[in-house]
View 1 (cartoon, rainbow, N blue to C red):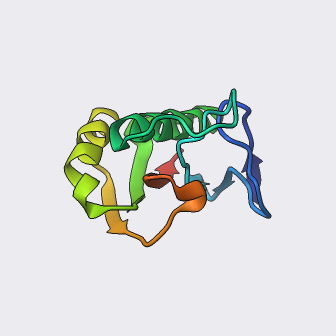
View 2: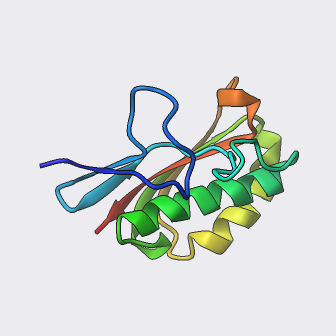
Length: 124
């Protein structure tokens, strides 16, 4: 049985998808970009500020599912520029202290031309 996760503390889905799905005791969260859910605007002009907002959005989805960062087993990180890797990692490391499995790739363009996006899978 699938359970949809939805919270106004993270950006609303802007397409035909859910913020997250719980299935088989796992949360599969959609990728989060640095949109401030209160304003609908992109938060921050540099990778550090944008990564902070992304982590807040990820945290809101985890909380809605009854989880936290320590339960994340896998992340997929998308960067607009691999030159931002070190600065992104500084923010990332403060949140994902249990060091889940991770993929991190640079992509040509992200939605709304943001600098980063992160999706997570967490054990509940």
